[in-house]
Length: 233
Image (cartoon, rainbow, N blue to C red; front, side, top):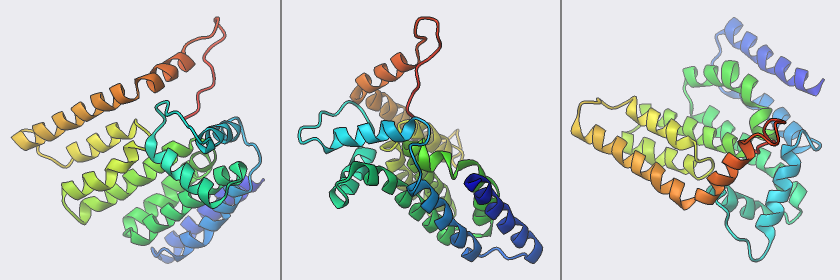
């Protein structure tokens, strides 16, 4: 029921915008706290919440041994654990940070960005990216900021803004590469050089976190014919 109420709020906001031609951020900012509160107060939804609690517990140990998990997410987790040592609260607080970033995106966005956000992005992503695929949620949000920067600055700025996404989810490298490549003329030497450097960066990341990727491949592998194990996104 609480999920249906959230979707109802989203589409009510869309109808208001279409009916009044209002494209400001106020309506969107008024409904975001609902989703933030729902994600923060959630129970042990699915399996991801419990898995992230175990992950945060590992981060809180004095002699944590890095196993390839994205360093940006580790830094965020440690910062939240420093503020609130309770592991359960720290995991839930990631949702507050996530929606705070989305609020900044809405405030900084133009009319098209805000309509895309309320009509397409929020309905499909509000729950899954704040409660389950948390690392992916942060990576996608940072890429949204990078896409937003296209109309405000150079590709260098886009790259610098989008780069932290990789340190929250390694697959963001593909999104960032596509984002930059789509804005460059392919036949120019510097365009080719830039793509080559991104490819080399991806290879470097693979060798830095090879154990992590090997474990991921193992998790995806069929287990005695019973299908794949659950994989934390």
